[in-house]
Image 1 (cartoon, rainbow, N blue to C red):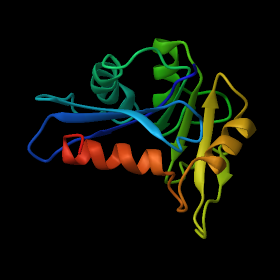
Image 2: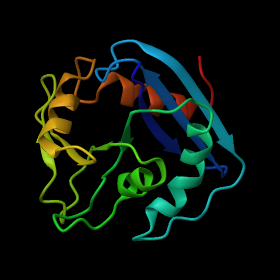
Image 3: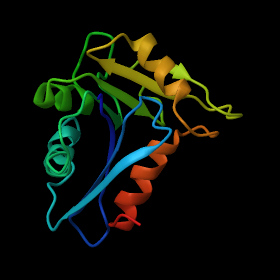
Image 4: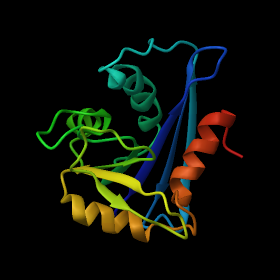
Length: 168
């Protein structure tokens, strides 16, 4: 049975990091089968151009709580420009060896290759990039993910879980 995951990381003001993962049996994430949250007492500092270095340790930790996944959705970009400059999703894909979809809420100027996806009644797009699958197919998947709003429910859920620090 295929397994699809979505992840996010939050950095509390007090320090450290909290990563969250939701897992579903369908790429629409209509029903979540698992939720995992893991806090870390320390986090690497943000370094411009090396955001992935900060994100990978908490992502590795929370992904270690779940069985193998067939596809992962990350909050951010897979590639940062049309030439393939690696973003967070690219580094996650290298580690996991599975397709990764990046869903960014804000435009990154060099990422002219990102596919704009409009969901719900929002007039603001999401910016979708992908590794291991065609960007247009990834954008179609994001369009069909569960939830009536701009941000798919699975991404909203991992954001909430990572900010709260626990599964509710």
